[in-house]
Every structure is written in structure tokens, then in C-alpha cells.
Length: 463
Image 1 (spheres, rainbow, N blue to C red):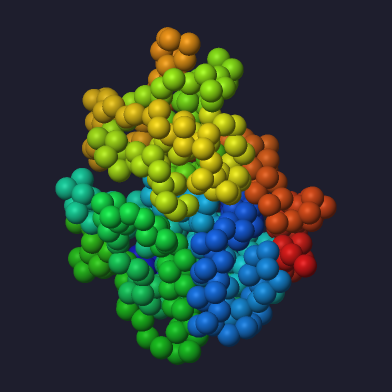
Image 2 (tube, rainbow, N blue to C red):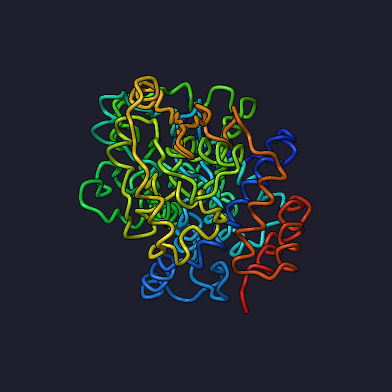
């Protein structure tokens, strides 16, 4: 029998645009758009500039553009920096099933695709098919290896599995067949970063700079393809059996049926999600509850006497830093995000010269958290659903925001195309002039008709 690993590799190697349902193809274009916008905005962050400086010391110049810089590096180097930029502001996409978040695929897959397009000069249809296959493979891998709640509390990795999907998109663009892609998966699985969510410095901040480790996973996927094209042998059937990738990555459970059942007919990629706020997904319901309340009552920051967040025990413990010292710390801070919304800051400006802002600090000091039993049960169990609600004291009376069980942008509560495009435009305009934003948007949304996918690069460099 053909192994599960090889069946996924054959799927990636053989998928064509005509095989993809129209709604999935349209959705993948929007994820490409979203990731590039996040990357352009993220390239303006100090964290990304530091990543670029480190990577340039290790990687030679090459044919693969670095977003918004005019620089070009060797494939894995450019992909590492682009992936870090796309994830830098924590505004990049996710994958969620019934509220449970399982990674940030776009920051890995689109970064890998950019390097693949630069090397292969594949047409836009091939790029779209490669991305669709990779999003689907990525979703199936992480779904199949979800651990028990007991193991989740001990060890878990948010994006490490994305190394295999990075190999899928990059290898497909380089023209690898099923056998070679399966070999690349073997390398990608064994090169993947270790699962490290429990060691993000929760108790000894500042938090780790890479947080979800998208960029190392991206780099691992490209290296895996490079080793394969050099004729080296990777782990055979790395996703299969009792000692497969699921065991390597620290899970105690594996559902092999999820990997391939309905492949090409059932599209888990439909559960890829968009983020409305540049912050950890786990706090989005609380942020939206507050924003809804703010808008409904026309609340100004100065009118707010207190903000109470009803949340889970874990979020009350780890996400209440009222004076974050870094951009990454701020992305995991409920008080910081709520203060940005109270002051009406555009999402793209949340981490731009805000840490010394006295008016922002005044709001963060008024935020408290209370453990709500129902919300704690949803987040604390295997559902890992980040429900939330916010109450605000203004004018001497308490106002209740809506209780939300799913964050906006997931399959249950989708963001429409216009909202995703508006987000892209705001992010891309951080570095690009509006005519370039217009042209890039048009190129992405019509990518399947492009004769050369490198048309995307024409408007992404800053002179």
C-alpha cells in the first residue's frame, strides 16, 4: 500500500488549479494577499530588521527578494526573513477548527512560495496550486497529531509542523515529483524546530523573539528540498506509523485517517482564518467584545474608569502584563491591546512609538481580569476555544460587552473579502505608495492568470 506520506506528496505534486474548488482558490488568493500585507508592515519592525541583519551574516546574496527592501538573498535566507516579517506583528493568518487555533500557515507557506517562484519562475496558476496543496497538507498534519489535554499542558508546538508544508509548496514550485517530495517531507520532519510553547519565557519576560517559530520552520522546509535535490536521503514515510512525526513532535495521539481521507474532495483549508487584530489569537474575543462596546456607546478613553476582562485562568495568569517591554510582550498583553483600541489606534500602528505613551499606560492601569467558569472551561479543556467578554465602568455604571465564543475571521465568523482587502491595503501602505498597493492587489487577485508569478515582486520593493 502507498504510504500516507507518499499520498500527500503525490497530492502536492499533481494538484492543478482546475482541481481546486472555486471558493478554495479564491480563499487562497486572499491568504496570499493577507500574508504579503502583513509582511510589508512587519518589515518595518525593529525585530525584523534585527532578523535581517543576522540572516545576512549567514546567507549569500541570491535571486530571492526580501519584502520591501530591494535586497535579494539565497532561497532559504530570503524565506526566513520574509516569514519573520509576516509573523512579526502577529497579524498573520491562522488555522482554526471550532475556535481551536493550530498554527500560522501563511507566514511559512507564502514565504516559501516567494522563494520558489523566484527560483522557478513558475506561472501564477502553479503558484496558486502549490499554495492550495500546502495549506491543505498543513491543516491535515496538525489536525492528525492533536495531543490529549494532559500532553498539551506538558509540550506543544504551534507552527513546527509547517516545515513539511513549506517543503510541499517550495518543492512543487521547483518541479519535484511525488517520490522526491516524500523524501523532502522526511527531511522537513526531522529538521523541524522542537515544540516549545511551554518555554516562551512566560515567567521570565521578555517573551522569545520568534514566538511561534514560523521562520525556522520555513527554513527547514526549504533546506529539506535542497537536500533532496542534492541526492541525499531523508527519513522514509516520516508521517506514518507508531514512531512517525507525531511521536517526534511530542504528541501522544495520532489519527492517520485525517491525513488522507477525502483528499482533494474535503478541504480543511477552508478553516484557514484571518486576524482582525495584531495580537495573539487567544485574546481576540476580549478585544472584539471591548471594541463592540466602545462603538455602541461612543466611549472615549478618558471616560473609561475600569475595564474588567472575563477570561480563563491561563489568560488571566499569562496575558495581563500592563507594562510590556517589547513588541512581542505587547502582542500577548490584554491591557495593551485594550488600550490601543480605547485610543482608536489603527492596527498597523499598535507597536509604533507606543511603549512610552502616557495615555496608553493610563488605560492599561485600569484593566483587570476575572476568571469566568464557563470561559475557563472552554479554554481549559481540549476544545481550547478562546472565548471572552469585557465589562467597562464608565460614568459610574457598568456596561457589558458581548460574550464571544469564536474570534472574528474564523470559519464560524468569517471576515468578508472587503475586510481582508482593507486590512491588506492598510498594512502594505506602511511601506509602499498607494499606486504600488493598487497594482500589487490586482496582481495577487488575478495571480492564476499570470504567466510568471514573479510579477508579484515588481511592486514589493522600496526604492
